Length: 198
Image 1 (cartoon, rainbow, N blue to C red):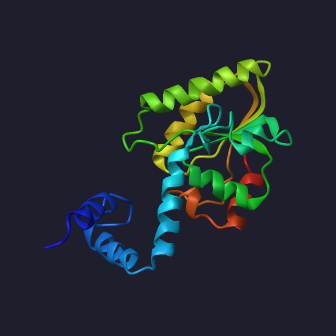
Image 2: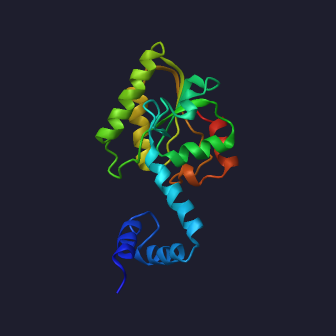
């Protein structure tokens, strides 16, 4: 009954977080009812994501023709302070506070079993290389992972692995409730957690 293009759209978009087949179907028909210029603008915005890749230093996204992301390339950022976060949205939440002027490492989605996967190990190895290139140690490594059992486990592993590579290894203060996620914390709570890190 549905044209093949709509079926393909629904199949692809229903895999996105918070979108099932029903919402993907509604989205398809919403987009089809837009005027052609609006639809073309959205398609262009979506196509622009293909022109991005990961920063080799922090693993945030950057334009494909840039060597580093805008944060790592910014000479005003404190290179001796690095915050390890789980997701890109955690980085954005911390940036919104305006309280952090260092750099980041995006570790990647933590597995529910609490075991680091090869991606996590590669990213931590890249951070060690970066520290080595910068003189061998950091002023501070902030482990800014959500206070869940998996985040706490990962923080312990990272703390042990980077002992001796940073003058201070800290965690965010517990303004964020246990089991909460950084991405959903309000700016004031996150600012407080950054200021009261220990």
